[in-house]
Amino acid sequence: MLITSAIIVFFSCRNGTRANVLPSLGSMAGAPMSLDSAKITQGLLYRRIDSFFARRHQFGGFNGNVVVLKGGKVVYKGCFGYCNYSTKDTLDAQTPFQIASSSKPFTSTAILKLVDEGKLSLSDTLGKFFPGFPYHNITVEMLLCHRSGLPNYLYFGAQYWKDRSSYMTNDALVDILMNNKNIPGTMRPGRGFQYNNTNFALLASVVEKVTGKSFPDYMRETFFIPLGMRNTWIRDVRNEKDMRRHALSYNSRWVVQPEDPYDGVYGDKNVFSTTEDMMIWDRAFYEETNISNKWQQEAYKPRSFEQKGVRNYGYGWRLLTKPNGENVVFHNGWWHGNNTVFYRYIPDTLAVIVLSNRYNQAVYDIQPVLNIIGATKEDTMAHMEEEQ
Image (cartoon, rainbow, N blue to C red):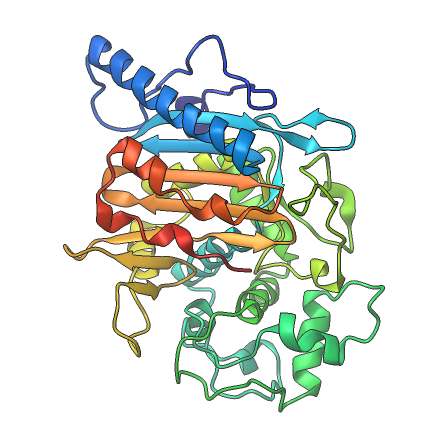
């Protein structure tokens, strides 16, 4: 795709060291600033953001990669720490990370694209795709905005998946639900918002039923290859051919995090990507090369109103509604030692992308970055969501 060469200036960085030359601020949208003002802004923003993450790396335990975009320009890119701590293999710009729940906007985009193509409807019930499904009146839309009433498989899975040495897959999860109609924690569909991973695992299975392809194959063929996201894939434990070098997952003490049976489920997680590919993904929304603006606007609308407040959830996106009615859209993630931030304020084409492979709750505190780049105070509550 042309957008790849237009917006991405590939970079290399080793173990948090500063580059000798500041990265280019190639324009992605709008008229460029004058050369002098661009250089001044570039230098100030780059150095201040770099200094912040360098301190967080040195003193706060941060280990990961960062990209900051604003006004259609690449403001900052940096890499800090290790891909593999034991071998001292350092992170670089092409290092993929497990992006945890930041995967959910990928799944929702796939669903909304299929809706836009007339291949399914938001009002379709799960019984259409899984005949005999014992939880009635649950629609695709309810899954997208976490109003299905289904419980989270991360909490009930151990009760029904006895072989802890093998992976639970999406098909296995569907079978558990098909054969157990009264799983504890189930609520009436549509009753209220209840964030859980079961919803997005089922959405990935719906994609498979509609397209006749595995979810990883559909995403690769429909989005990743056409967009030029060369280092992005969805892990499929049944076929590990796509697995390649990626950032290992560590706890805060540099102990490798063991896998568990739930590592076999995708849709809610299991996208592996890089900060550079996430830049492409962010830009694809503006250029409508992944999904139309019409369905983006639907995705960014709040869908739950039981509790008053500025926080809400759309179709696969967490939302923060500002006083002027505009929404910050974002989705953080946490899985094993991986912490991720995918934060977007669309009116400013602002994005903060942080991918980390060493557990560190401070990853979600992007307030200092927002302060540096001049984001308004109302933008800043979103980053504190830590979620699986």
